[in-house]
Amino acid sequence: MDLLAMVLLLVGSLFSLTAAIGLLRFPDVLSRLHAATKPQVLGVLLVVVGIGLRVGPSLDLGLLVLAGVFQLLTLPVAAHMVSRAVYRSDQVAHEHLAIDDLSAGAQD
Amino acid sequence: MIRVLRDQAFAWAWLTLAWVVMWGTVSFANVLGGMALAAALLVLLRMPPLVIGVRVRPVAAVVLVVRFLLDVVIASFQVAWLAVRPGPVPRASVVTTQLRSRNELFQTMVAEMMSLVPGSLVVDLDPGTGRVSMHVLDVETATEAEAFRRRVLDQERRVLAALSASTDDRPVRGRR
Image 1 (cartoon, rainbow over the protein chains, first blue to last red):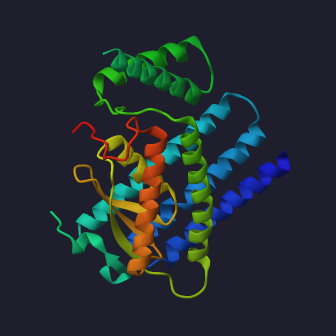
Image 2 (tube, chains in turn brown, orange):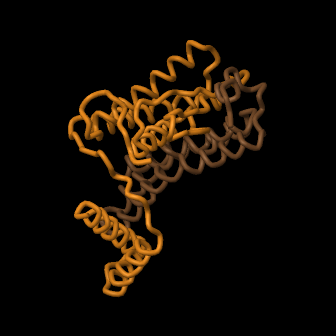
């Protein structure tokens, strides 16, 4: 059980590490947003499960579940708010976009 | 009316539970405080009824969840690899997809789930027209954009199959 918890924690942390690397390497705000928000999904879930295995059955387990659930519920919203703000304030680096349906179509 | 009351009662119980769990101990003070706070929240911050036209189909719901977790795992590796692989970083695209459903709950679920899968995030969603625009990593050609649109529509199909009360494929009318 401890070994499994260790593996989960380690793999989860590795995903977070790739997120940090992506944050540095990706060229524009929108791409960086991917790196800043997404690897957390699997990374955080793995870490939460890993901690859960270590903690064992207790009410703290509920707190971990809440942490995971709220992470999943809020992440897309946060990413969406930032990306929308970026797009509407025209901070998009268009040279990094191969196709852009939003500018191509009618925009209010 | 009974539906609304039931939904409210459920929200009340869930908020109270969340409160107690966050304090970490089950005591009278925590439970009563949570109940009072939850009631205050429900009264002060009234939310529009969201759960409309929902009927859970267990098998389709399991398919939805399992497929989603699978997508997350696969895409996590892909995006992690994009981040660390040597060479230039891939270009991305903003791809707009026309959703079938006009139900805001299902639109939100599709957008949220696509957002949680690494590699795509929502830039814009128009609930009136059902058009969702997503920023997608590593999509450069029209063919790849079309493949991504199919993924969004497949996701929507799974959401509707699992939760939509109307059985046919017609657009689901939600409250506007």
